[in-house]
Length: 230
Length: 188
Length: 96
Image (cartoon, rainbow over all chains, first blue to last red; front, side, top):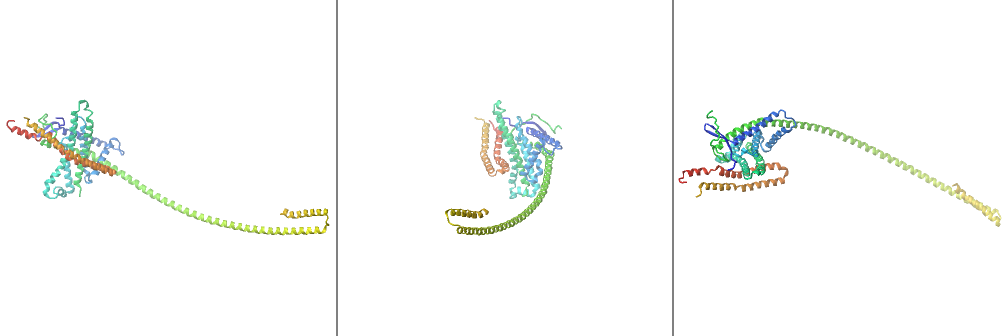
């Protein structure tokens, strides 16, 4: 058995309720810490942000501005207030996906619970924005579409969205992880630092960025469609 | 605390790649508890301030652009006014020029006509003078011929005819004739 | 006689390979999407950005079935839903 498994670092038991602290959870904390530190740095530097951006300020502004344009291009103007949520989603997934380039680190998105949690938040946002912006019409148009007898089918179709969203990213990243791990195991020791580099570049950086982009775009599209008036 | 939180290192856990059991779904809890506060934190600490900053800057730049646009419009109006004035002046100038040119042409034509008339008059006068001169010359020549002939006839009648006298007479007559003929020619 | 567990493992691997076979059709669908996107970029090069974005989203949507096959293969190989009931069956069978 090769070493693509999720390591378990510890177990929390609360009144018989057993919860494993897996590597994924720890990596999630690490990525959150990185993002929080970055946000705090930006927050403290925001006061002396200049009119003409340079260096660090330029990078931050470019990131946020690119995301704003992306929201405007792909989304609904009604959901512009959720921009922060999608920004966090994108940066979190991007960081999570590209942690695989560091040897010995396992990308946390290659464990199903994390993508499922993210996709469930997207599912919640879809339902929330649909009910908030369209009310009963959304429920009627989505769940009771031709007739109330179709409720189970529609419910299944609606529930398949987070499942397919989470499985898409999980499958892509896990496939890359398995291929890279197999490559590490199959190559002799002296070639182990040269041969997997292209695989890392493709599976961790290119596919990771692509999957983060696709997850965010699909979430945006779903939420925007649910909030659309027509 | 005894039952609340208990870390069991190296407990009976399974390292796995993928499974769909209760533990997988329990894993959602720490992830959601991690991600939702993170998203709220990032939204209010990083995203919104930077976005507000960018929006303010964009609004300021748009305002500056508007001001520049209005300034440009007023400048364009001023320029159009000046151009209109220039055009008027140009029109006036061309009218004045045309008038002057017309006047000059008229005057020139008139002067040319006058000069031509004068020349024609001079020509007729000269022709008349030439005709008078010719008549005078003719009269003179006729007079001379009549004089010579009378003189010659007189000589012929008055002198006796001998060889010596004849030749002398002839020479005299000839000399006289030459004198008579060439005298008007010399005077002319 | 072979151990019956080995037989079950072999069947599981074959099943995983069959589950992965849908990658053929998935790849063909993705190739069609990419070809159409390239064609429209060639016809309208100024609309390159939106076409590329929509192409990636469409590729991701078409990839779903392939990913489902991959997940099923992973499930069969690593989560082993067949082994548990079979081991239970072996436990209660006398003489095995």
